[in-house]
Length: 350
Ligand code: SF4
Image (cartoon, rainbow, N blue to C red; front, side):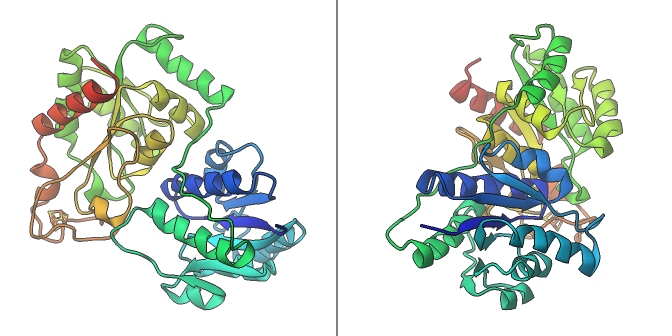
């Protein structure tokens, strides 16, 4: 088979991590095929953990590559490479336009939204299945056209830990007491860019305190924006190492690979944990796992409360439209603790 593949995924970090399944499927079926992935600058280090043979192309669509000149520049760079086909999981006109400007023969994406007009292979966006399965539908559609006998198999995202990431995680392990063999610890990720996707501050504080009483150390993670709140939660609960804003994606992946469990909102750390084998308890408020973004790690669990108003938004929002925010207030720390302990028992042991 000739003609390499470019995967265009310039959405959020969580979406890029899930695209790792596509990368693995392509690699397993066609080990020598030229393969590239186009991502935003803040996702470059995630893509670099997927497979050393994958070329990572950065498209800084909101920065230096902004506007028509920028997209043409990146398209020219792609056009010069050995790629003839594009898989575009990102449902965005700009991503589809990039593939078209690059002159890629086949542009496979989902048949939803205005960007579909720029594709020449349109695939049904299946609802109620995981995003990894939807992405695989795109690969099957491409394989049908370029190598009909191939039947690529579905693979889950797996990230390869880097020495830089392990070094960063080591500095956290040192604070836990042992750099090479950290004691049992849990990771808590209380952030989300959407306020309604965040479990309550006081719930996190209670949960952390109970973990500490059970003999499990706590590490608080998140982005730079979460730094202050994580420090406050560590202080209010009297436990945990605040590491939000301290670790790169690679450092966070290395940290999670050693954790007993991650407890997180419906956000990127859930997918990062799944890609390095960390069991996860994922807390869903205004969204539901049925949207296709539930945790994939072995033994992982999704949690939420039954409410007539739920789900209310595809991505969460800034405010609860009902005003009571019961999807998160009624998700009580005791339930989350019990579930977390069960997950740890069934996966890592206590
Ligand atoms: S409307 Fe319901 S699901 Fe949406 S944020 Fe409010 S409580 Fe949560």
